[in-house]
Amino acid sequence: MAGSSPARDRLGRQVTIKDVAALAGVSPATVSHSLSGRRKISESTTQRIREAIDALGYAADPVATALRRGSTRLIGLVLRPRDAVQGSLQGAAGFLELMGTAAIASLEQGWGLVHVPNTASECDLSLPVDGYIVAHPFRDDPVLAQLHRARKPVVTIDGFDDQDDQYDVRIDHAHGVRELLGGLDHRAHTHTALVTGTEPNRWNEEVKKSVIEVFHEEGSQLDVISLYEGEGVQGARKLIEGLIHDGARRILVGPSRFALGALDASHSLGFAVPEEVEVAAFTDSPLAAHAQPGITAMDVQAAEAGKRAVENLLGQLSGSANEGRKIVPAVRWRGSTRGQVPEPGSPTTKPALRAPA
Image (tube, rainbow, N blue to C red):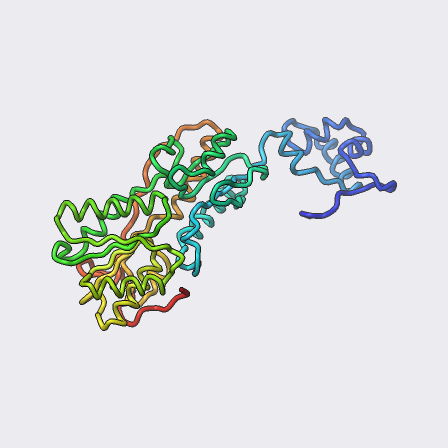
């Protein structure tokens, strides 16, 4: 049992592989080969070893076993975003999907996944993992630099170009942004505001850059504001009330919690969504899907990113090739925007769903 004390003999000594070998009448090497499966051992000898193990209550040291075979079969997951997990975890559903899918993908390959504690500048390197997945690193991320200095195998999810190698998982945010904006109705004639988060990760930077490029190409009016994600629904509502008061009639946001703030702001000022004010988000979550009306959102396919990161890291560890395909986000059309038809079953009534600030 995990955490239980090691077996001891009648004199209080810890039972070792040598004790098992002596009782079974074989060499310690034979016991080791039987436990590891590296060499074929006769059934009769294997049975004697099992009986000796049962009699002595022997359990192999898992760390020592891993060191002997050169692998712990553990993957370390380093989740870098800080602001996004402030407040309601429902608003950070993408990270929960990523972690859950990565754990399942690891288990399917006979590996385990460990969440590695990390701060703004470093992560814990003491855990016995074979390699690391670093999700959504910052630009010039000190944790990524720390892992590279320590020569650790690393795969990033949504890293920057200078952090990229053949095994990293890339998300094509620009494609998703253009698909969402391309489906909005009469975009060029609508005063639009974009509210992004403040963390220096690729999602924030690419979404902002791509939206600005599209509006610049069209010569359309766009206000761009950054807001700390820890402000949550209430902070977004306060900010967006001012934007609507100043004439914005289409609110584009990065975090889905900001979109709930936009719904609240619209309703508090007496504007109907989507008839008078449209709202869309560049991340999806249960909050967005079950709001009233449902919020049109860009699904960055976090579950696929988690699965592919595990596959790529295991490929890197084994030296196999990787296709290097980008993940393409999908737009979930719902009742908060005009133009595209909302997904079946999407709520279209008011008022907005309240959520933790």
